[in-house]
Image (tube, rainbow, N blue to C red; front, top):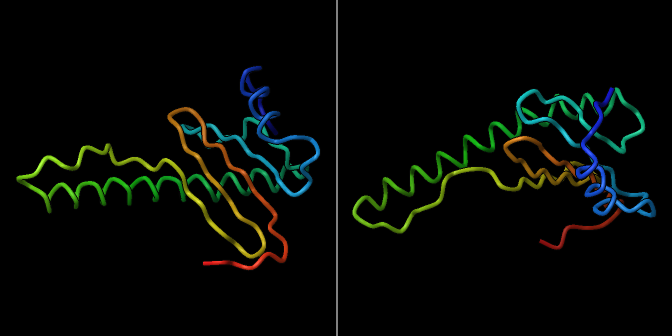
Length: 123
């Protein structure tokens, strides 16, 4: 079950996810609640399950980002080189033949699920 997304978000998502792209799905979540606001995933139960799994993953990534910045600050006590705020800006995760790209924000988490098929890692 999705809630009605504001028109500007719907317009933006339509530009990010052209209708000709059959190997890409999007999921827009509410950051505070984790509720599905908009999705191109046809199976609503699957979209809700993804939302349930992604929300704590984003929280943990944010915790790690804050910890890394804090560690850098402690290591450079006398230097003023670390000015980062310690937030997770992008999380990329490869699971089997799918790649998830999560972009968290204060209000929303945008998740793009890309089916990479049989593509091989180059790294």
